[in-house]
Picture (tube, rainbow, N blue to C red):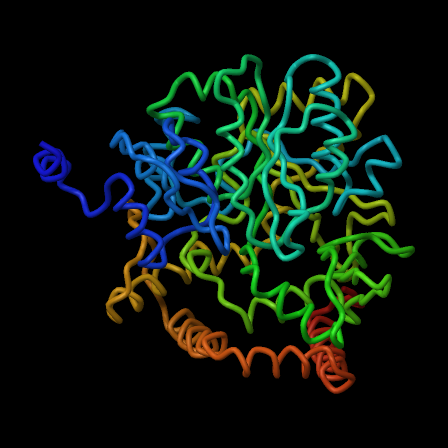
Length: 459
């Protein structure tokens, strides 16, 4: 009977065996959705954030149906959320309104990565009774290189989740904690997790009613947990890492919040480079896995999308900047608009309307990679015999620029395959020599901008 069931499915993936194959073939996002959605407790979070079988499978196949790693049908999911007029291909996705904003609570604003807007919005929704909890991401107390999802039910619990976590975080595993409970919750997640939720809503309407708001974060990639471990190893001099901070603000405030590590002996290491340079170095010398084939930057299937306002004026300076931080915000659905409006009316957040094109310009380089370059990357990976996710919609063809950029990019991706090389590159990157290289690189970009009529570029 089971063999007939598998045969009739007509698919490469199904049930536990399918999830194991997805992991083995490098398609797993480690989003935690298969763990959280399983009605039988078949999976748990294993080493590296991957799902592992811990219980009996009831063969409902929900784990595979919810998996965004094997593919995302944007036209189907987009039409379900936005209506039949939805079309895939816009860099930002559908936009009802765009803003820059921040929390009007100074403590929350300073604790956040940018303007503290997500934490403040959740605190408002919780305290006003619109939700009974929020699925958020916190540092894993048992492993400073990992993060995990929890259901926060108070301001204090929400505050522990403030600041972005750039590392492996199978946070949707926390959906299993909702079983048997009543009330509506909000979920904060990155694009791959938004995709998994939308896939789940398609066959689990009860879950869709429980989750009243999906807040998506802008995301280029999630660092593999090995990135934090190896960075801690090369900076520790034998000390034990207690916590990794990815964007904790220092006295200068935003945008100077960069990677920091607290060690168990009370000592501390702070990256001598800015946040963008630090994370880019880590991403170039450590594995990125399934993130390399994701098409979404701004969580375009969320109700609200939030990220840093990397938006420059005509002179090259940050157009929207304050030490306490600001967030760029995209309202996409009526639920998202209503949540933002209620927080503004309650005096919890400040929002200033801006053209959506400004957000697109600030994120353009990443969006160009995701929307224009990755289709060619997928073709190269298929040619090399690698499994790639299914995207059943037309994708743009490659031109000479893309072919060159992707060829160089994929050659550089060979570096993370060798552990000793990774550690050597990390030591060099954060050495005085490496810092000098990065300063010269920034100066060259400044001169290029000046030649284009921009007076100053600072990062």
